[in-house]
Length: 91
Image (tube, rainbow, N blue to C red; front, side, top):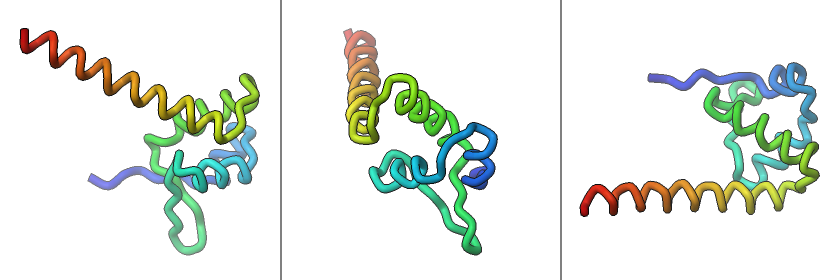
């Protein structure tokens, strides 16, 4: 099943996000951009992440490096919660 892709310019326009912010997210490895015929797209499942990062950036005043740290910590928490569930099931 092929992922649904959305144009970055449309996401930026509809969510009032600067394209430079999207590029910073990509450069830091937080999102993936696909280029098709010189147009840039992101997969549908990344739109919620972009909106979350945008909120952290503007509402919490985190820079992209801060966003990276928070995202890494959240991933670590999810992993540890999953490990705890597995350990509880095995006992």
